[in-house]
Image 1 (tube, rainbow, N blue to C red):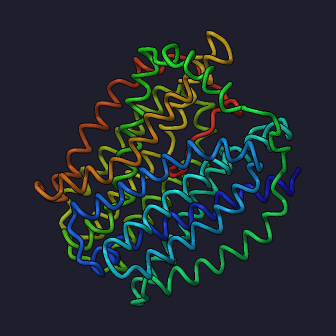
Image 2 (cartoon, rainbow, N blue to C red; image 1 turned 90 degrees about the vertical axis):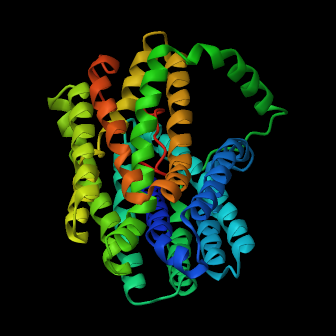
Length: 405
């Protein structure tokens, strides 16, 4: 079982590195194709829509061929799709590549979380926090190497070709260790799931889940905005070089990773509502420092503070939803977490596009400033929304890294 855990953890790290390599080269992509903020936001929205659709398909695909094969296929397809983006000769080709990147990432996201749950159940202990920490570590590595490639003037195609070769080699090695399950051979599992889903749909949308979902959506919207637009902000609004501009994402992800590594210890000592309130307040202070900073390095420090603040709130919000639903049984807990996932994941996908649209009219500095009151509102609502004592998250309550938060 240790081999399976290593394999799943490695896949999370690979996914983090690939997504960071995509995000950190956004300024290069924008400059190479002469994209406006609005058009770049639209292309990123295409990526998000494709990912969201793919997550709906992934479950049925995994039921047929097994989640291990979904992971193996998607983990190779994602770097190939990134290479297609680097080779794109125009906006239409770029849009098609973005759709492929989103679809591959959606499949990989769903498949690797399913694999992690399988390992947790077999090992009878949680590993999800470690997997998401590995995702963050991979993201830091992807940010650093991507920033170095940008500073060296390496083209997107060359960067993604090298990255794809490394990732493919890793997947071929660790893919054998992924736990296999028997694919479903029955007539129509999807129909049974759809009927059960329709019956549970209304029951899952309680006022408490809606409030927690809104809080989680706000947190992930801010994270998505930083991941996608921090480099553009530092390069175009603060005059940083492309290499220095990548440090905003590096600082954010590094501090978020550090916070996640100690998050379980903090949760054992302090109430969840206090951690969510203090974390989002710290993130608001960090983004305030970003928008008022007169130099790139001070803005990078602000992104670091924001990353530290956003390390633990989302997992704690997910746990709060699961514990709330658990008061009515395991099925209700699963429904609550599923509804929360829908809201937060959608926000993560749509926020970068919305930021791009607003930046077209307000400028990126003022648009990022609008995220501050959003986080302040979450900090204000945290004591009322998170009242349940939260222990370790149940194995089924898996958060999506696409951004993990």
